[in-house]
Amino acid sequence: MNPAISAIVVMGVAGCGKTSVAKALAERIGGHYIEGDAFHPAANVDKMSRGVALTDADRAGWLDSLAAELLRVAALGGRPVLACSALKRRYRERLRTAVPSLGFVFLDIPRQQALARIASRADHFMPTSLVNSQFADLEQPIDEHPTLTLAATAPLAAIVERAALWCGDQATQPIFLSRER
Image 1 (cartoon, rainbow, N blue to C red):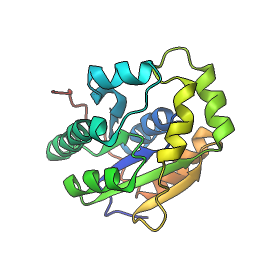
Image 2 (image 1 turned 180 degrees about the vertical axis):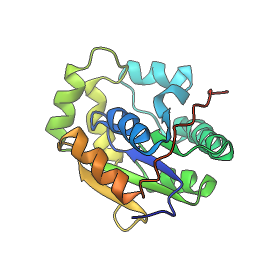
Image 3 (image 1 turned 90 degrees about the vertical axis):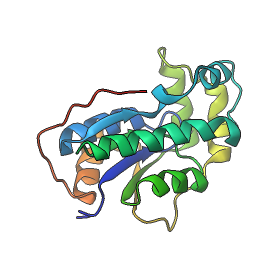
C-alpha cells in the first residue's frame, strides 16, 4: 500500500496499453483519467502521423501542459491517472516537479508485441515506424521511486488490480472534471 501517491502516470512505449490500463485504473480507484495524447499540439500529432519522431523540444510544451493538468485535477480534489509515455527520466522529473507525490506504473512490453499491437490499431496517429524510436528513447524507470513495473502482456484485470493495490486503493466516488485548456 502506498497512500502517499496522490496522482499516477501509466507509462511506457506505444502499444503497451497505457490508455486501457489508465482508464480502468482510474475507474477502479475513483480517479480522474487524463489522456496524455489529447494534450499534444497539432504540430506534434502531424509530425508523428508522418512517421517523424518527436524531439525533446517538441515534447517540452506537451509536458508542461500535462503537469498543469495534473495540478488542476489535484487542486479540484481529484486523483489524476494520466496515460503518458514519459519515456525519459527528465520527462518524469518534470511531471514530479509539478506533483511530488506522483507514482509511475511502467508497462514493460517486448518490442515485437508493441509492434504487433500498433499494427492492429486503426484509430491512432502513431505508426509502427515510430515504435523503434520509442524503444530508443525509453529510459526504464529503474531505481525511481515510487514506480511499479508490470508486464504489459499480463491480463488487464491483473495489471489494474496490482496497480490499485500498489498505489493505495483509496476508492471513492469518481470525480468528473471537465478539461479546460
